[in-house]
Image 1 (tube, rainbow, N blue to C red):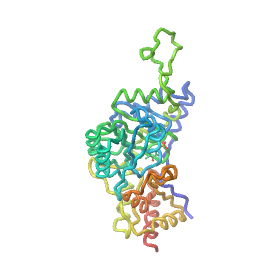
Image 2 (image 1 turned 90 degrees about the vertical axis):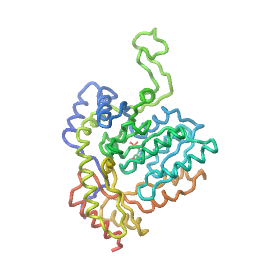
Image 3 (image 1 turned 45 degrees about the vertical axis):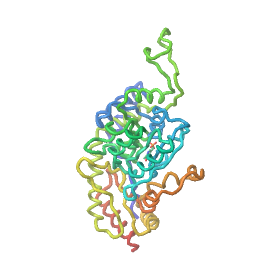
Length: 387
Ligand SMILES: Cc1ncc(COP(=O)(O)O)c(C=O)c1O
């Protein structure tokens, strides 16, 4: 049998080894100059004014919630289809989570559903403090409509772009800050670039950035001009808020800097391979394909998610796995996880249920060969037809 083909994986080369080794031999292993350099690299790529590197996207999401002041008396709306962390960040602050249904084809937050929920919530005086919208698979959610709704209903927008480094919306790169208050990224190995574990929060609001930076490091303030007691010697620092240790270390930041030098190569390879799947699979019986890119609306193609239309998704999953093809399902609707479901507060949402029942992520990553792609496509078509 051929070697296992993962649905995604990192792409590491000699320049990455050199970058990490150089830092390993430097005086700074923890959060030092490389973390700042990595933040600058992501800012200049995305156009964001401020970046706060963290030790995961989950930490960045938590920092975002904390900076926005989300607390136990608040409600946060979250896309029903995502990794659990998109919702858990609100729970970590004690807030109540309500799930917004998604488009059954793309899995992206359905803005009509959101508007209806907001309209009803306004009547009941239960509007959310923030909405976490997910750029699922690397395709941006309708950020323009989301921004319009946020202006009308007064909530903050947190764009979960864990999948979407380099994705564009209306010709602008995700995280540029045109549409969201805070955008978060993940650098887990399956993502567009990697720092092993790692994440980042981007914002054009300097006060939010400062808050996240403080909370990332225990809520401790060092800068003399920000101290409450400015009479003490230089050793003095103050913990002004309850924070965490969510810092990204310089070893991993140096890997991030090195990876950012190749981000456009990774994106181009993913886009080319997505186009190749479209050619290989177009017209295949019972397989729905993701929307292709259009100018200014380009996915980062973190995932290539097909829809198995004939109710055989689980059979197709099992068959491809038995052939060493690392297909995956992204995701169980978050409300279906026992932590949420067992509260009895949540009911199935039709778009999320349909998306979950059909979706299958097939291998797509920069090092996937043409031959492997052909093999995956042929195996998928045969399994979907029940041959
Ligand atoms: C949409 C989404 N948000 C957040 C996260 C959390 O990212 P991390 O693993 O970097 O904490 C993930 C991880 O897969 C994700 O897919």
